Amino acid sequence: MMEQSRPVNPPHSMSDWQPRVGIILGSGLGGFVDAMNVSAEMEYNAVPGLPASVVPGYAGRFVYGRIGEVNVVAAQGRVHLYEGFTASEVTAGVCLLAAMGVELLILTNAAGLVNEDFQVGDWMQINDHLNLTGTSPLLGGCNFHDMSLVYSPDFRAKFSEAAKSEGICLHEGVYAGMLGPQYETPAEVRMLKILGADAVGMSTVLEAIQARALGLDVAGFSCLTNPAAGLGECHLDHGDVLNVGQQAAGKMVKLLLSVLKDWS
Ligand code: HPA
Image (cartoon, rainbow, N blue to C red; front, side, top):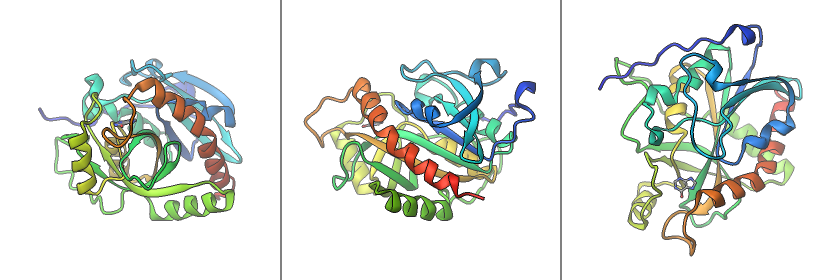
């Protein structure tokens, strides 16, 4: 089936708000908004054409505010292919943020660690991805966008520097985006390792593709909430993913504050 991105327009109540940064918060990371100086909130279902998630742990709302001097819109929650949404529905929020004038899109997610040099609770800055979802938000036209540098090298350098000066462990690596909703099998995780993945999750890649196609700078961060299947003792559980995400969120807040406060 052919898909085309549908235009999603910012509602009137937000049309005079000029955000520079959009941030999409993954599982367990919604508490990031506590660090913002909040001006307004809006539920996703108040925006015509914007789907809302049914996944536990996702609030499904936009929060507008400031971090330091920078206007930020935080999207608490996202929708996923595995919920039955199409690629263009999954990225409708990105189109909305772009229409609002966002320059930098920060994508966060919870992910299983594939690179065993990393530890549960650490953050990984995404330097590239494997789109293994089998689809794209750009289907439906000759949208041959260059994806050589999806994750902005300039922002990667800024975040790495900030992590060093804040004493935060920030790895860099490749994120493999899977369809889900089931977690991977150990054989799939061994395959992902051979393909060059450092972390695995069920989101982010389509949003990053859509954002680059719209000309936004993209930064991506994975909170490593569990060893991927076959790499740890434990049975994988969404509740554990949320808990680790909540505990690790503070480090990401610190990092974002550090980068955004100096951003001119
Ligand atoms: N696999 C896929 N998605 C995930 C995982 C995982 O191990 N952990 C958190 N999201």
